Figure: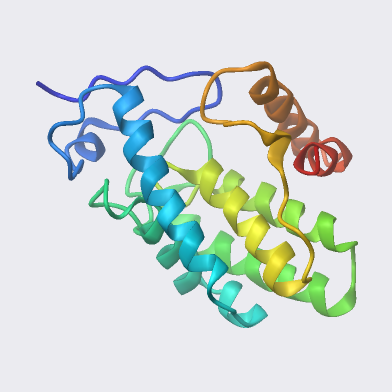
Length: 198
């Protein structure tokens, strides 16, 4: 029996080839998948809390990939590898590395020149990262964790709260989050910054 996933608003469907790279053959439902992924993500959070990283380390392709692998590597064989298919969101698969390099360079510039306040730098980074959509799946959670890492490790400020709710499940909080993302798509970052601190 294959993995049958239902997708909620704002989630990117996996291709059949990507589904075939599930490492735990007993997972059959979205609920079971979410549970295993969450367990994996919590392990990566523990790792982050015990480490310190330089700004240049955080703003590298290697770190972006290794964090994704830490978050999903127990569940998916493709974890930490850029997607090989085009999705309903994101840049063309061939442009991922280039778009990411530009984002990393831009973010380093913003930090070094205090172009924006710390929260805005982290949220602009998160928004651009998720819009590149580097990986087959998990981009939203990965980009939020990257924003947390930037705000904590670079600026020594507290993690974002992200509405204090699980944004993977359909809820009013998730709807507010997606509305804030759409505002950021139109270059208005205030709602997403506010949401991240709510």
